[in-house]
Amino acid sequence: MAVLLLRLAAPLQAWGSSSKFIVHSTEREPTKSGVIGMMAAALGIQRNDDPQKLVPLTTLRFGVRADKEGVLLKDFHMVHGYKIADVTERYYLSDAVFLVALESDDKSLLESIASALQNPVYPLYLGRKSCPPTLPIVLGVKGEDILTALKTEPYLYKNAHRKSVRISYEVTSGGAMVQDIPLDIKVAVMGCVVNGPGEAKEADIGIAGGDGCAMLFRKGTVLRKVAEQDIVPELMAEIEKL
Image (cartoon, rainbow, N blue to C red; front, side):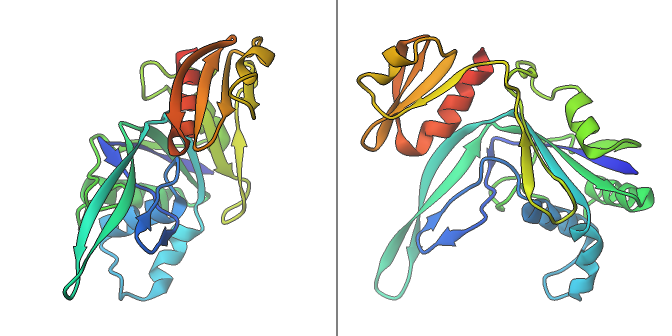
């Protein structure tokens, strides 16, 4: 058993698992399909090639550690059609840093992928073509299982620590993703912005929901108001500071 470790960091990343009409969202972390696409580009696999070429990549067991969650950004693009123009909304993760682990019993396969990522056939990007990665990408191939690697690999962001770092991984290749989240802090999720901070004053950090927004608070003291789409990244950013 071996694991390939990748560092995915850039000013912007966008890991969309779905796009609905004019809204192009992003997940909070790299998706397996997105990382497979990046590896396929490195290996020179084209869209119209035999799909069987992707099978070795799809069978890799996938995991992610969010060393720096990043901030959710919203941008817009003008799409010009015949006589009309539509405005599309696009979401990105700004300044995020992730450790990605890919596990296989075939060490030579992982080594070939690592070599390709260091000398790619086609340009690499983190979800969208407007998101080129910073270097280094490849951290190496190690002889350990995926969860051990995600828990023991040195952090890629100087302020990251086990108290706040979130880990997601496949139990089996292609199976459901599960999360390993530290439980040594108290996080409160409240439904009232008026009473929530006071009722959860013992919490290390908390969020109180409102109409289209929420209040971030620490030990009962309100920190700031955040928009609904920014709740998760803003909450995780505060957890990183604990």
